[in-house]
Amino acid sequence: MPRIATSAFALALTALSLSAGPSPALAKPAVEVAFVLDTTGSMGGLLEGAKRKIWSIATAIVDSNPDADIRMGLVAYRDIGDDYVTKKVELTTDIQDLYAHLLELKARGGGDWPESVNEALDVAVNKLQWTSGGDTRRIVFLVGDAPPHMDYAQDTKYPRTLSVAKQKDIIVNAVLAGDARDTERVWRDIAQNGNGRFIPIPQDGGQVVIIETPYDEEIIILQREINGTVIPYGPKHLQKRTEGKTKQLSEVAAAAPAQASEMASYLNKRSKVTSEAVTGDGDLVADVTAGRSRLSAIKEEDLPDNLRALKPEQRIDEVNKQMGQRKALNDKLSALVAKRDKYVADQRAKAAPKASSFDRVVEDTLKAQIKR
Image (tube, rainbow, N blue to C red; front, side, top):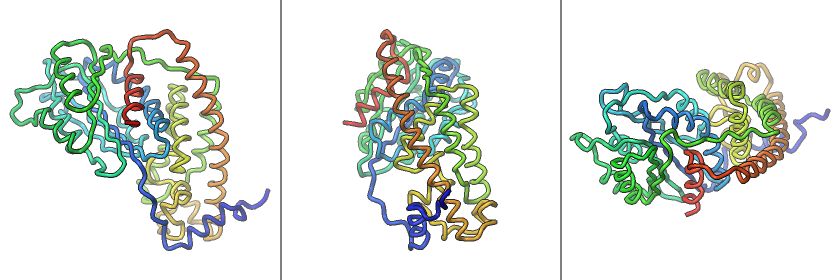
């Protein structure tokens, strides 16, 4: 087998390792989406559906704008007197980390009817780090079944928050779980003044349809092989976190193969832009391929043990080898993902119309608002 270091990949990597730094990138379009989720006890069914379909929703963003930087965030809320009032997960390109946080959420608490909706919207609009200016779509989905407390003196009330959202060009959609009339009145007002959509769905989030395909098993196997090309680097805690992400797919696959296949499909589609096998920082192969890092500029102590044991030219060979393998595997995976997409679309087309579900209404809304 010919040495990969003599390939075009080696030339590209050598040029990067000797350069003064990555060339400035042109500003990319961005899509930023935050979910503001009621996590009190009555929202259990919908929350579990969101966990199962977050990768499908993320993929819908990619399909609508494949070249965009994608950042997603989360504000979970309950009420004063519960375990927490709000929990924030910052807008991030690290969708695997967001997914891990989502899995930790449980539907508990509540008791009285109104919830801390005002505070949750204030956190989403004013305390998440939205990108300012540029070609950016900023979208919020408020998801809940109970109206806001309007009697909390310390709260910034939602009309004022929506005024700020307009200034920041943030669309606010209101997804109503159930059919409470008092909540519906407020949710319609929020959607209208947030330049968004009022979206009613069943209390349990609707029938979240999981479509298994004949391609799922092979997709998961290929993604595992792609994860094998990851070279964790950086501080030890970051290397450990990156290693954990390579194992996440297997953990999901053991419990929900169709969901693991959706995760792999997202990663494959994003790889064309980011070169990532896992989301977030810490993969040397992805960062060198995309020009975000140079092998020659990385501190010795930030390299994994297996690379530190090699001579500089051998390190280049090893990174080039993993780059080449990842590209070949992703090319093969792309063909399978295309077949999976067609199979899912065909199955959806054959299915009888059902009541709106959380994932479908969110995907349809994103497709429309990203293209606005």
